Image (cartoon, rainbow, N blue to C red; front, side, top):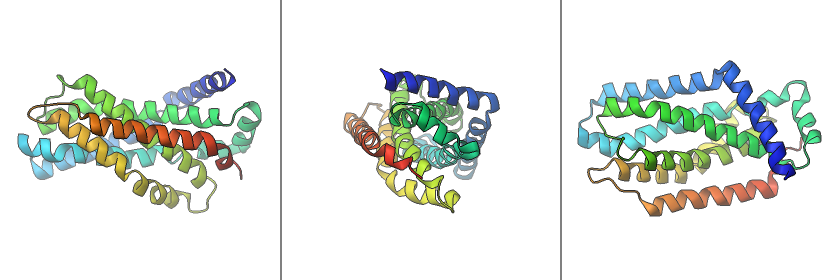
Length: 224
């Protein structure tokens, strides 16, 4: 119970901090919007091309935008040694990670849902019929990005070349998530849409494995 109580309090802090400044959300939305618009004007895709290339471009923009969003995740706790205070205030250090990855997942999912209508208009694809299934894929994919991204953010925050280290560590590891999310999204945007249970199961398995690893070793990542 202490774990969830501490996580709830810390999650509230993360959400209030971001929604007051809206720095990460604004930056991420603008980045994704620029990428989506740029590719739509560059390729001028037809319906068939949109169904073929659109999901990959969409998740590629999500992935790079996520690396921008995850970068300051633990950097904000470096000021006034806030991270040490948090570690002393909570009984389970995993609650710090759980709150931050929950906040990162919420932020990512929010920006993705906001960009979906624009993507549908520019790429001439229909998403209303499969919107609930698409949100499920977005959630599992965002969680798959947020879990290792939050862990590596804690590592890179204490490094010298922190701006370079996080993408170097994160992007190769998230290749399976990118592939699975793209394939699952492609199935939903196909001419005969359907939810790919195999890729959905892969995303769920990835999330469970890395969340378990973070629970087991997260405490060591917070050590200076």
